[in-house]
Image (cartoon, rainbow, N blue to C red; front, side, top):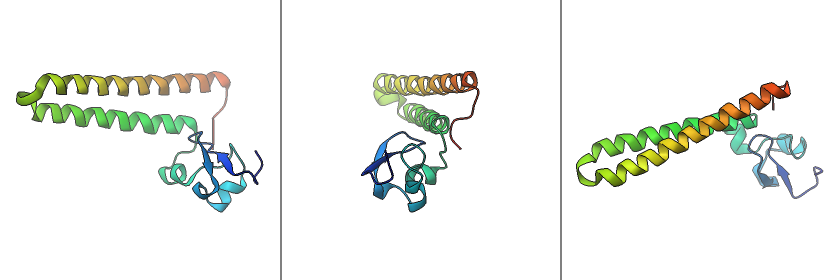
Length: 114
């Protein structure tokens, strides 16, 4: 896409976003090269950084769910334990995706993003 298009793909998160989601400088870099303001604010510079961020959030979410399960163990323990296990699995899946992305990055011989 050229810089006159109605949307650009964010280099970090890969989402097609409208002009308002970018600073003037990031928009001028063109589709696939600039980062949206959300990714700039989060410090996300590449797809690998996005996966790292997602893994951290998923791990935190699983830990919070486990803590909530411990607090409510007497009242609805089974349902809470199942939810906690699902969230722990989600965190493990995200960590596996991060490891896969890093392995692919190393195999490709270069750093993704800047």
